[in-house]
Amino acid sequence: MIITIDGPAGTGKTTVAKRVAQGLHFSYFDTGAMYRSVTWAIIEKNISLSDLDSLQKLLEELSFHIKEVDHQKRYFALGKDLTEEIRTQKVTARVSEVAALKPVRDSLKVIQRAFAAHGDCVFEGRDMGTVVFPEADFKVFLTARPEVRAQRRLDELLSKMPEEARNLDHDKILQDLMRRDEIDSTRELAPLRCPEDALKIDTSDLSIDEVVEKILNNIKDKFPSRSV
Ligand code: DC
Image 1 (cartoon, rainbow, N blue to C red):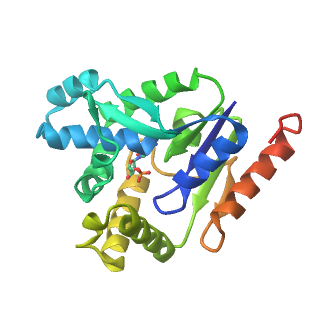
Image 2 (image 1 turned 60 degrees about the vertical axis):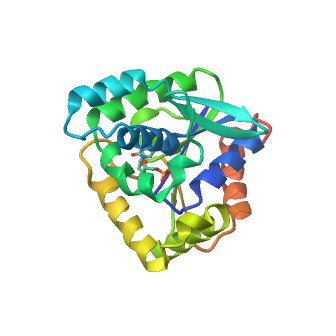
């Protein structure tokens, strides 16, 4: 069974997807981490986004994989643990441009579909329900007001990466979110869009517990024989 959870940054997607996966005993995949890892490698190797040969070579060498350490997912590419580095502002500022490139999307789509062969999974991203798994068993689309999303992102940075948050404030983060939304939702390939058949939830005034409960209840209603 495949569950997709799409939506823009700051809607609570990652936490919700993890909790839904736990509740169902499913595997969980954060596909944004994959786009971030490619972006990190492009910056590290100083590859120009117009240099398609070097980009293709990088994608072939990338060998992206995920390891579970102490119940936490760790993301590896090019033999390096990138779990923390992919969350830095340096990567965040460039990831939307990288995610708009066809060779990048094509190659990550193959990896994402291969992950699905492992069995029951929750996939979180921007195009999971529309492009990568259009036949998914259950689709969710999360939204939230932009100011709420910016505040959540700031709180997250302050608690997890205070160094990164030092030069940022609510307005700067809001501007960056709006710029990324614009690129992610207007790009030609796999733009961020709510799948027609998705359960749409505005998380602005809901707790994580309420969002998770809503999703699990809807899954239970659709698949009554599954123990949720
Ligand atoms: O969820 P996130 O902020 O970690 O995602 C980082 C970027 O990756 C985001 O700006 C859009 C892109 N992305 C995408 O284009 N398709 C996905 N399935 C997941 C993420």
